[in-house]
Image (cartoon, rainbow, N blue to C red):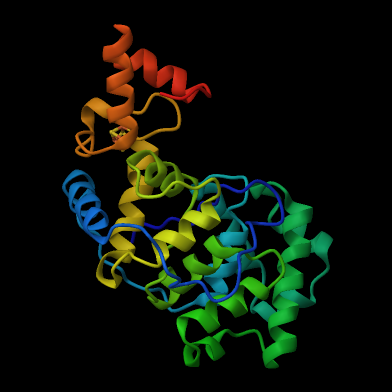
Length: 269
Ligand code: SF4
């Protein structure tokens, strides 16, 4: 299964703590446009089928290890951690310096080691063992609130755990999804947490996983932060950013690419 554990927030705290109970808060996002975006991206990147891994603790720790490193490196780091300890209880009982040595290859090792112990210890204190089975009996809002109450766990991480591990229809927003959603005009937000709040309220359950994965793919491959490849994009005819860039280019007699470069460098189209 293609995964998106890579986190964009640098350092710790891991992502911006969100408000409580807004997994499905009111939103002004157009459901019709969301469906059209999903359809266009499905044609570009293919359908995506969710196969939850059923391991919320593992997913949570894996996401924590993605901070400031690549997916491939975090995968190696997570594998090293799992092979070094026989249980999460053993990880929680180890010293931060010992864990830091095991995960050194993933960067920010001392910070991550301390945070991993902190999170595991908190789960153990709450439930008497290191398991998140208890969230099975919670609704999405309750589970989201519990996860975001853990040290350093923000809305995107919580949503990833709920979606990838448990198959809950909670829409995670990383920096790619945030950028794509704002360029298209689905939202007008400054922070990924706010984008997640608005999109999470309207993305239909049947496309939560597919739309998330394909928006991440789109942000990485086509709608890049710098020089987005609008000429290859199936959304260009209804993308607010591309339309604005095209109008500006027409007004001033300059190429669309030069406008794209100016915007990528901080100016407006
Ligand atoms: S048209 Fe350009 S800016 Fe708009 S979504 Fe596509 S690549 Fe991104």
